[in-house]
Image (cartoon, rainbow over all chains, first blue to last red; front, side):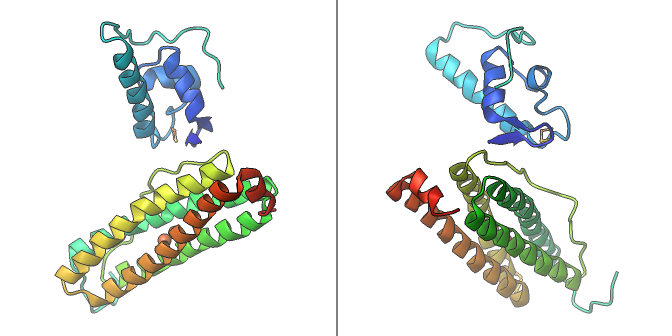
Length: 77
Length: 159
Ligand code: FES
Ligand SMILES: [Fe+2]
Ligand SMILES: [Fe+2]
């Protein structure tokens, strides 16, 4: 589904950015442009980041996130 | 503003504007979904979803009319979140989400009209609620059909 209408970015692309380390709205916008315009999609993007955070906590509670560290290898899906 | 002699309760006008926001959001989402279906060659789905979009526009029209009648200002500035499907099942499910959100909004507004004794507005909202229920019925029938005959067969019947 297209979550960010302004930029035509799908949930899959946003999930990929989050997998590559995006941890807030700024990270996601830098990685794939999603959320960089009107902001209507911010709640949905936060939801996707939240899903990833919960999944990570489920796997290892000791792991820590570093902000702004989106891997260079991220490419759009 | 205007020459209306009827002054609506501010809470009812707010509720009408909240319902209006949902309608305006649906118009846009369904309109794009209809065009996507046409783009993919599913002419029957295009016709049906386009009609749903126009139904939402008729709902919006009656709400704008009612807000003005009650001496309020219709809020056409505010829009909810539009989410666009990339496949036919996704389109149906995302439209179902908007309809799911519309039902409690309408029910709450109807209850509010009851509280404030605004029977005219209540009747209008009840007719919109019935229309949304029919829409949901159609969406659910499509999703059940997909589950029953399989996506490929379903899509072949929607060309
Ligand atoms: S919908 Fe994402 S910035 Fe507008
Ligand atoms: Fe409607
Ligand atoms: Fe509807």
